[in-house]
Image (cartoon, rainbow, N blue to C red):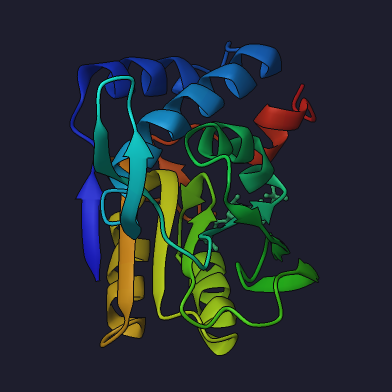
Length: 211
Ligand code: PRP
């Protein structure tokens, strides 16, 4: 498993505003989008391209275009939906699939409640979007889901991660082509499975169900 933790002052700045409990939902949504676009730049570093003949006003030359089959972007509902627009701004031709998952507040076990993915993901590059990597249970289940459908290469984009979740994922995805791109790696999980210092419940903060 490869892990990239963003190291850019603009990302740190925007994340600090997201973490602030007084940041209202509309600002939270806008910043999430901006952050994802910045992280997507790193996440798509190895996206497959192919040669493409083009004619400029001066001459003909060989350029690049995204290779077929198209990449697939999979936001994990609910909170991952807040990351979709930021990702598709950078990757407008990607196909989009959806996975709805919820984590039981007591057991912290994730379960899938909705799925709309392409039937066959063979040879597709898959980008999973979920703002929080806490215990890693949700992301692992999502990764397994897309591998079961034939994907061979998965990149997850998360705003925040906890070391415990990252270690669990590392162990569980051994031998598979998995990359995790994080806006920041936080300190730890608390006894409720929340990332510390974190930003609270991303889904609630995105969709205004807090306060
Ligand atoms: C949150 C978050 C992740 C998951 C992370 O979702 O968006 O999907 O928990 O936790 P884990 O790494 O321990 O599995 P939640 O279950 O709160 O659902 P929501 O997106 O609908 O808010």
